[in-house]
Image (cartoon, rainbow, N blue to C red; front, side, top):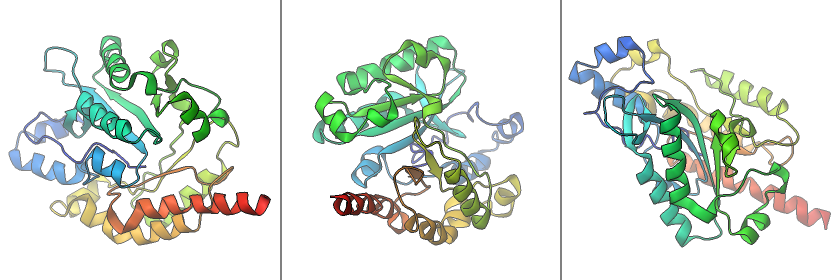
Length: 286
C-alpha cells in the first residue's frame, strides 16, 4: 500500500487546505511557504496508474471540498489540494478494466470541510466510477480472490463516516484499522509495528502496518528545504525494509504494509514477495 497515495501532485496555487492549522494558513500567504509545504506534503512520486503498475493495491485517501468553491466537487488533500477525486477514480478504473483479476482497496479515512451533501456526491461518484466492480461489505474471511473473481468484483471501499451504513458497497472504517506510530525515530517505529501486530485482531478485520515516519514541526523547521524524502525517508527506508523482510503474512502476521515513496528500494516487490511464504505453507500442507 501507499501512504497519502494521491499526493504525487499538489497545487501550490490553491489555498491551503482545511486540514491545516490557522497559523499555517496565515503563513501561506507568503508564496515561498507554499513551496516549502509542497516539499513536506508530497509523499509519493508515482501517479495512481504508475503505483498500480508497480504492484500497489491499497490506497490511503484523504479528501476535502474547497470551501470557497461553488458546488460539491471533492479533491484529494494533504496540506495542499490535489487532483479531483473523480479523476483519480477514473484512472484506477481504467487499470481495472485492463486487468480484470486485480483487486484494489480504497480507504477513505479523512474527510475535511464535508457535510452529508458532499458525502452523497462523493459516494455517487464512487458508484459511477466502479459500478458492478464494487464488493459489498462481507465477513472479511469470506473475501478471497476466488470469491472476488467469481463475483467479478475488483474494488473494496472503506469509508470512515457513518453514512457507510446506508450503502452495501461501503465497508466500515473499523474493518481497516491502521495504527499510526507518529514518530521520527525509526527504532520507535519498528517497536510500534511489532507491538500493534501482536495486538492485531485474529478475525474480522484487515490490518494496515504504516511503515512511515512522521515529521514534527521542529523536523520541518530544521530541514525546511530538504523536504520529507531527503530528511526522513531515504535514510531510514533500509531499516524499515529489513523489518518487512523479517515478517510473515497470514493470521496474526502482516496484512497490508504502507510506505512513503513506494518506488524507492523495491518496497513493493519486497512486500509482494512475502506472499511466497504463504505458497510454501500451502505446499508443505499438501
